[in-house]
Length: 49
Length: 243
Image (tube, rainbow over all chains, first blue to last red; front, side):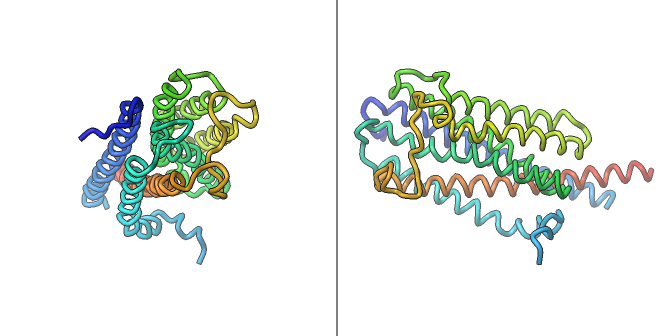
C-alpha cells in the first residue's frame, strides 16, 4: 500500500528509494569485492605462499 | 599495549573481522528503525509539512559525507607522519563510501529543495561547497587508480585529502562564512530543545547512528579487501622475481 504524504508523496518515496538503493548497491559491491579478494589471495597463497 | 599494533595488517584483520558482522548488523537495525520511525511515526512539520520526512535520509548522509572526508584526513595524516600502510588503505577504502553519501545528500537535497524552495538546485554556499566536496571525492579515487606505485599514490592522495578538507569544513560552515543562502543553518545541536522537536530528534539521531555504523562497517570490509589484494600482489611480484 502506498502511504499518502499529500503533495509530497512522490518526493518522499523518491528520496527514500534513492537512498536505500544506493546504500544496498554500495554494500553489495563491497561484499562482492571482499569475497573476490579473499578468493584471489587464497589462490595466490596456495600457489606461491 | 599500543594502538599502533593495529597498524600491522594481520593484527588489523584479525581484530576487525569478528567485529564486522556485528557492526554491519547493528547499522542495518538502526537504519531500519530510524527510517521506519521517521517515515511512519512523525508528524508533519509547520514549515515543511510532510516533506520533513526527507530529513531522516538527507541529514545522516550529509553528516557522513563530511565526516567520511575527515576520517580520510586523519588516516592520511597518519600515513604521511608514521607511514602505516593500513591507514593509507583505510583512507582509500572510505572514499567510495563518502562519495556515495555525498551523492545521496545532493540527490535528497535536490528532491527536498524542489517543493521547499521551488528549485532543484541553486548556486548557494552550502550546495556549491557540497558539490565541490563530491568532485574532490571523484578526484581522490581517480588519483589512487591512476598511479601504479602504491606508496606514491598514498602520498599524493594524502596531500589531495588535506587540500579537500578545506571544502569539507566549508560545506559544514558555508552558511556562516558566506551568509545565509537558501539552505538553513544547522538543524541539530547537542541541546535537543534548541532547533528541533523531540518527535523528530530521536528518529533522526537513530538514523545518524545507523549511517555512522554503516560507514564504519564498510570501511573495515573495504580496508580488509585492499589489504588482501596488496598481499596477493606482493606474493605474485615475489614469485615473478624468483622465477
